[in-house]
Length: 154
Image (cartoon, rainbow, N blue to C red; front, side, top):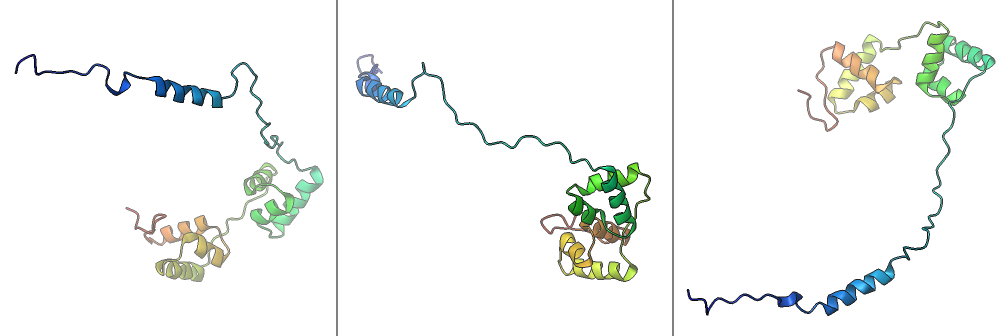
């Protein structure tokens, strides 16, 4: 190949940049003035709240409610606190915790419903217990559980 045939275009499409400069200047005009302070509207955030504190009478009422058979979920809803907080208050005051499990016939029902494809949450709601309670009962009986997508766990 001879040197006379080899051509290299040095400027090409970018040699005349006038239209590109004009486009950039138009974009710059759309931007806010950098010398002016930026005004951003205040963000509507709720202020952090302090954890709800129960007074002595409320604590005694909570303990009495639990001892009368109310669940930690019911008491949490009644007093506007989390179920874990209810449990912590009860533990702090030396109240023995109930472990609500399923009766043998309920476990059989849970196994049957779970085998039909019901979720742990749905079985728990049907039987009036937490899904974790259902899971624990199924595991104690040796039932293989499914993952969140319905596939058998390995």
